[in-house]
Image (tube, rainbow, N blue to C red; front, side):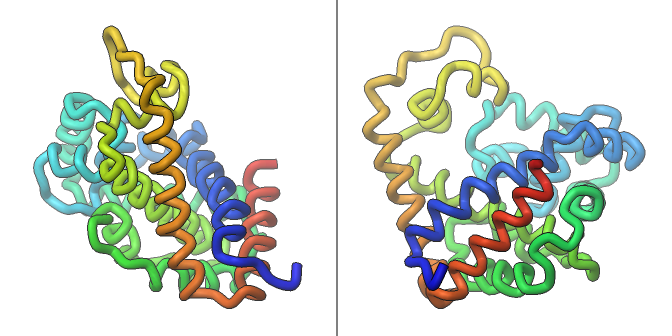
Length: 247
């Protein structure tokens, strides 16, 4: 590639970033590491660990920042998780599992160069309205390349997720509506929604609008953070990480 425009970068890289981040969080090794860190319940580890960067807050704040989960589910597992060692320590222990996963699955794919480019994207992002992303952006990074790469991919994933939450809200979609308009009921059940679920098929247009807004917001950051040649390089390096981590 000689160069990519910003929207091409979004469409080529963001799906891989999402999938690599999901692979870490859903890997059976992650809750096992959480158990060794004191969290017998993997859901408590997830909510306290991922949301712990927000600090000692009420579960309602975490629910607002995460967006897609039922508020009672967030409260149940957040309260259980922070009871172990507090919010910020939960985040530190959760980040440690990300670093270990990167060492196990990413290796030198991407290398120092990806860390440099990804770091520039992260630094260029405007944080207003994106508290969970800002919390993770402020966390210290590992010294080694595999661990640092995994962390930066996670931060980029939190960035995209936070932008999408802003975009779906702007489109007039409640979290459950956004989930159901974008996928089938299985996704909503996976996220913890129970009982009879509404038919949100009429909201698919709003969901598409939100996706377009998310892409546009992300593209603006790629535009100012990286040159066209650097964007092409970034995509190639993200693809290398995806190949290493996802097989």
